[in-house]
Length: 282
Image 1: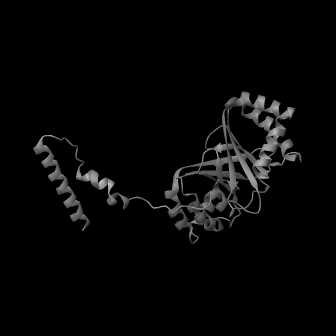
Image 2: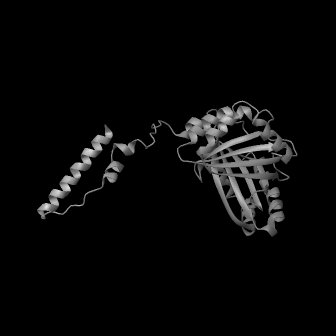
């Protein structure tokens, strides 16, 4: 029936075009049948229908029982300055972590081993959300030792960036670990609008990946690069990482999670990281 309708419309357009040209008084540009189809109901068959949400995905996916905000920092260090940079961080960052005047905690601090080279990664937790973050930033501006640290650090860096993150409700809160461990930070850039779908699948998947206690934390971005997810894992070494990841494929449901979440990803990246000496995650 739809074909017959389109044929009639096409014939009508041809007749109208011929009639106008015969009179020679009016000139019109007639859209082709294919253009008509493009703007017709036919196009709507290929348009994805998305039901409007009543709440932000951050409210649906983040933990309700606390008000933690996380900040992750990526510092690209001049290769010749990496040792001096590490010593500077090990001298200053633990003092902020230990000072009760600052409502923040250093969750972990690392150097990238495999991935982007000569890079440091720092993960902070602010208990109290954005007000705690603002309080810490204001107090640090009055902290001479920290301001001296920032000036010295600036001489050693090639670039830096950060993100503010929330924690997925179904992941464990990161807590200090004894070592030695290596850590893998897997970062996923999702297609906009797919965060809820990602969370639904990983709420089940995390049960599969907890059997060896390798799951450290799962986060999604609020400020910075948006629709970014970070999963943090701990392993004894690269071989144990390989063994644990291969074993996941033998558990029911893991193949389904991978099958349905891979199409949600625009870009993904893996870093293998070594903790600094003063990192709470050893």
